Length: 586
Picture (cartoon, rainbow, N blue to C red):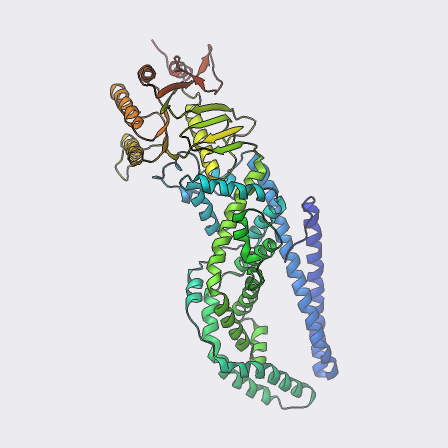
């Protein structure tokens, strides 16, 4: 079921598909009443007319299949239209309507809680194009993963190739959004798959006898005056055989996944089978959809058909057919044969689909943002960026900055006026490091980074439930940085307004001690502070450099250029800000 869609005229495509579905619905209804009329006339007046019934039923089934196809296509195109609208909203950085990913927040994570990876107006909302829980978990896991340059390079190659296939990316997401229903846990399904089940071989006899005998008895009663009682005897005999498979089919009906989920996997398989890829990682993910024996598309196609029949066995039409032709026996044999052949593959394929969801999300983001950053992973413990910007800021408002730390520099002491951009810059650097680790292009003209592990301390708050003050929470974060650094990790730290929960004298003493202690490890990074006294350390510590953000004060306004500068900030604006807020100084 691959939909032939004009991506350049989706609204028109949607209108055409809707009209076809309505037409098929009307034809199906008319044919249904015609079949009823033929049955009534055939049974009451002209038996030969019943010969038309099989052909009319075949036509009715064809109309049902065609109608369902058009409804599926309609659902798919609707999602493509919505994807275009979502694209526009993301470009405007209007993210309020997207899933925030709050459940992936992790308070004690080395950097996730400080860099707006999850929550309202977050990176997750920009990146996430997954359609189910397991796919979103995979994406979130990648976002929070430790830095791995070799993996980042592999992903980057993959993402760049996929980003050149926008129709595939939209189709993959559109299929998932169109058919993935409210998820049903698959734990019971996988448990059922792992349970050995022996096929009752001799049931092959009633499986063949059922349709032949049922057709013979039905023909005899309709055309050769065979007593109707034989139908009752045949049904009673069939119930004996059907009872042998009833329990197995009921157990399967309870654990089989939602038909929407299976349809999603089946159409994804068909969609991917048509593609060719060059990147090694993509080829490994693509392999199950191209092999000749037991391709994923065929396996999911068979599962979808069986699931539909098994979960609709209570339908009155199916009950009548089952009693006459013993179709449950055929369904049972087909299910057990499928289970024995493919059970071990299903969990593996679902995992691969989760990775496809994550990697297509990243590729869709890369295609949408069209970044041309030159990203280099280097062996030296240094970092160099040119015109770096925050990805969550609207492109027309974001201010770019250049920044460098060579191997000899251990600490950048960042000072500046209130609201001048210190914290935003630190988050800008940190979140772009996360993008690079994901294999995405950072929001910069050039981005060069060594083998670091990122650790931040910015949003430290008190917790009444845990009887933890904000000062103690910050000390706990700093201790984790020190522990990681003492263990030999190449930590890149971002510490915002350190020790702000204590008095000025203790804060300055503690900050100086921390700077010197960190300098004795493999770590390096940025520390922001309002304590301008610390800037004098540059004169005695050759591994510390001052940088700053400034503001310009007029009579009634404060102006910010949000550009980082060399040296400490010597003018602050807290006094003026308080005046503007109405505080009168005597």
